[in-house]
Length: 418
Image 1 (cartoon, rainbow, N blue to C red):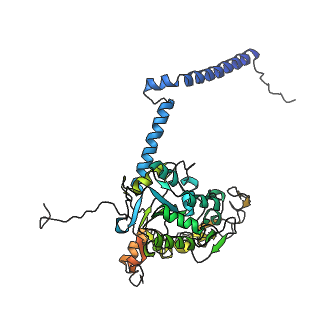
Image 2 (cartoon, rainbow, N blue to C red; image 1 turned 45 degrees about the vertical axis):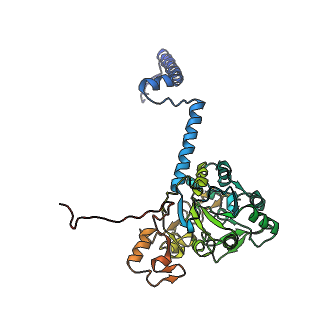
Image 3 (cartoon, rainbow, N blue to C red; image 1 turned 90 degrees about the horizontal axis):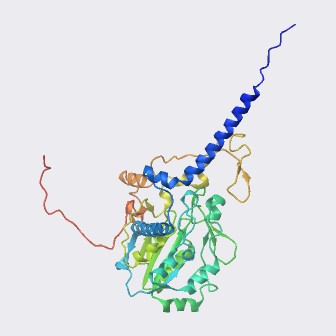
């Protein structure tokens, strides 16, 4: 007969004592946590750490300082790329302006995804008002009625052809630009500010076609001859009109991306162009100060702006053309039934994708400057110039200033000092 092992039963007294001690320890931890959190300010001050508790006055003061800093950053980051006949800064006598372009009523403070901002509290129009400049509300009211904001402002919740939609009625369409409106605008001011806006962001490449709405509530029109980062025919026609009808024409670029802006140079009457970039929640307050000369546009281009983006080494692999699919990847993540929650509908991933960055390091100035040094652009000639000048509109680090100066070497030793 096999001897059964003894099963040791827990001692009831010791078990009870352990349970009581556990409860006491738990209560002590909870009470201690509450006590320390209540006295956090005292403890932090004892160790010299910031308390994390601020009065309403301190919060308000910090907000004012932060907004002022944002305005300084915006002013110092704006890039003046064209200023014919010193059109900018505008005269102090200019108290009224016409603001053209649908994008003036949908000002961008940021991109989308990780580059987005929660809200644009101060846009261009509000900044003009705060600066004491009156703008033509007949125009801006028409734009707001034509299309009240972007339909898709979040790239993570839309497809590229949705977030990249472009809105602009044509200047020749009298349904929107009535003759009386155009006459009123010319009587209102001889100065026109034209806003060009583009939105792209995380997960959505800029499209190689233009998806446009040119009629209120109308169907989306697709232009396969121009990319999203070129001017639309409507924007080009608008610039042609204001260039012919206004004494002072300033273009503001409010874009997440570099663009093709050759027409800014070739359309008669377009005097100045300022790349305002993205102004965040409050930074647009600085733009009128730059336009009227209270602040200097100190920015320089952080990328190369080419006349034609197809000249970029990365263009062939941009957009959907650059997306490949791994072979024999069925059942592997994310093509294993995983769905994308970014869109309104939960679509399953169909493949395991990759992008081949065949251009390697040759992006931006690394490509354009290297290609120039190798003579790659020598045979290029167009209305903008020859060689490199015919390809690159604004080189990396380009930017003009309101200040005129020159320099020369008046004395230099013939040899370097020892």
